[in-house]
Amino acid sequence: MFPPMLLYLRIAAPDRSRGGIWLPLLLVWLLLLPLVVLVLVLALVADIVLFVLGQKYHYYTLLLLRAFGLLGATRGMIVHITSDKTNVDMELV
Image 1 (cartoon, one colour):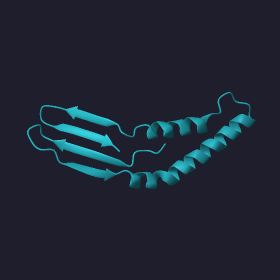
Image 2 (tube, helix red, strand yellow):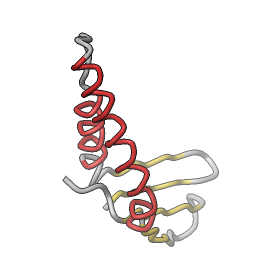
Image 3 (tube, one colour):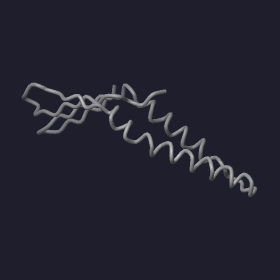
Image 4 (cartoon, helix red, strand yellow):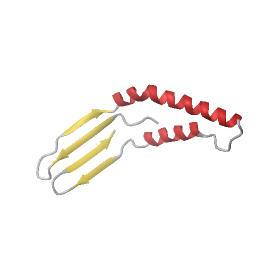
């Protein structure tokens, strides 16, 4: 599963027409990729060390991979926030 690549954001007053802006999240994911790889390697090393030491919980890598899967599941999410002065619509594509 891939994380969302675009964010479509619309902020407008209730009586005005809605113009939106497309924000490329792909660039954010590319910048975070080295950090994610480093964290996964450290989690894998921690899991191996804890397994060798006989500790009960040694599933940090699995926890991180499932968290990334959860991030991928946010594709298609739409958020509507309405107040008296402003309407905000956010869509993850």
